[in-house]
Image 1 (cartoon, rainbow, N blue to C red):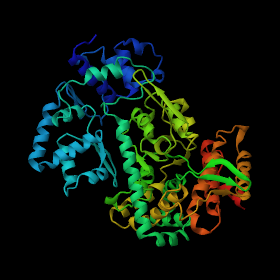
Image 2 (cartoon, rainbow, N blue to C red; image 1 turned 45 degrees about the vertical axis):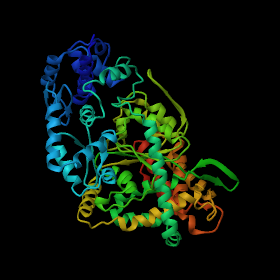
Image 3 (cartoon, rainbow, N blue to C red; image 1 turned 90 degrees about the vertical axis):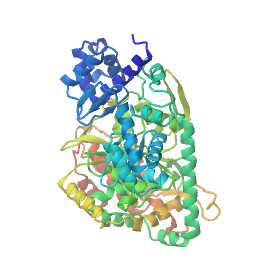
Image 4 (cartoon, rainbow, N blue to C red; image 1 turned 90 degrees about the horizontal axis):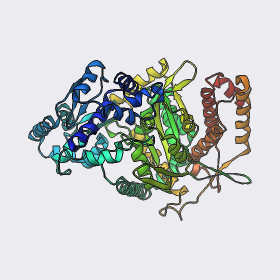
Length: 597
């Protein structure tokens, strides 16, 4: 049993290093070879319920020499990097050397090259819990050579680039490196010294409820409430700017804007294959007003808000549609189309942290953009709280160390995740067998990297790089309209007495078309086995209602009817998702032709 502080520190790093360097399948093989009792009790790698537990069971039974032998015998992940107080992993080579000295020397070299700007950047990264995008940094750090300094810090192995595309980039301080930098800047009083608390809270009493490791003791809830206040202020300031400087122009634009206009705008930018994902993301933004959906006899109990999932092959533009188009990317001349201050980007957030910060959004409606949704399900226990969150229910989560909640989560999600795409249908790579309960609560769109999609992706990337596509020109008009409609429909004080609230009305035609689509689908499904739930129709109706909000300024009626364009697109989504869920046993085009003839 390890009792010394140093022993506890090294144990923590061994757990982190094993998880970083090897997959769960690799750890299962390593555990079997070492005859670890916990691993011997498992029939296969699929019986592993907790990655932390298997890593810990190995880490506590080995010493440094055995750890070195493991990395010699078993090839670690090629991309894995570890720069800790006791161990280092670079380019697939394990070392028992500390990274402290190299990091300290790197900071000195960077300071000699760029002066106090280096400290400002690193402190901003630390304050952001170790991960931040270039766009976020530019908000806090004003310097012309920011990208150059970040690149230099990466070459000095002080930070790493955690995500990079042609249009977006994030940097991070590795979890094990963060204490070293905190000590360097006086945030941490001694080094090493954090293990005893970490061990007591997260490792000593491992249970199946472990959601993921947190590396700091910061009060995330207090910080998140401050962030919510900042986002609310951002929305108010943008709305005031619209009302003061662009109101007449926005109303005039709204008199001709609708789903058809948005569709043409996006097709002109991206072509007929890629445009649809951005259309979904922008339409979801209108739905965030989460207003009532009614019919001619009264309330339906439904509202316009819904969660979106783009899933499929990697590299198909999923993140671009849900992140860059909504939040904007000035360096690539991509203007933000989303509601200002109402989208919470969740890159780098662990599931444990998400459950904690969710309390700050109690009773509020925001959109949580999760770029790598797969990562949330590396930890057992996430399906149930996320299912409740998507149902806008009451979340309460208990661990051995704390009780979180209860609180009501009233926001929505926009997520991306990769799956194994087959010729017909797909297979989820998330191990939790209950993940289908999550998919069932989102409007889902499958991505295949077809030749046609590949060609359009490469054309789009080239045009963006060459400046041939300037999305900023059209984005502000759409964003102004979206912001104004959202403010009106949510009763914002600045517009409450100037414009009237309008619910969305489902017309008899909507039920007729959806009914025809349902009948056409069911007669084509073999063996009378329906593999999608009735929620699919609900999500299609919510999409149609959200899309119809684009036509707020079309008339002076006291309600907004579901538009023909919205109904057509909603039916298409309904039929295509039903086909995917049914392993593509029927052709969507045939169903749509039958419905609309």
